Length: 124
Image (cartoon, rainbow, N blue to C red; front, side):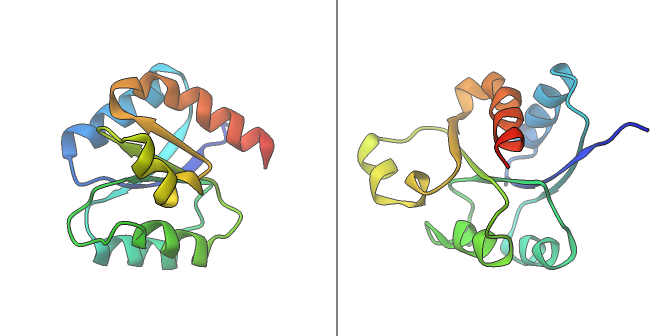
């Protein structure tokens, strides 16, 4: 039986949701990805899913800067969290939860995502 990793993805762009899924598919990572694009659905999935990894877009309307990360860690303190963002300065990375996350990627480098996921799952 093929085992799939369960990913909770908070991403407000449908195009980016599709792109992330394609990156995983191309890398032959079996993933059941549950995507949400707002705070209400994110909270619902945190309460009902048991993800193996959580991927968060850094800028999602309706969330304050570190809120999605804090919620993720309050529900699942040991589940890896990966931040994705369009761009980030080193100052922002140091002053926010990006520095506390298990990894963060710039969306232009999304091809690195499968390797990051594999590394994090092996670590846990």
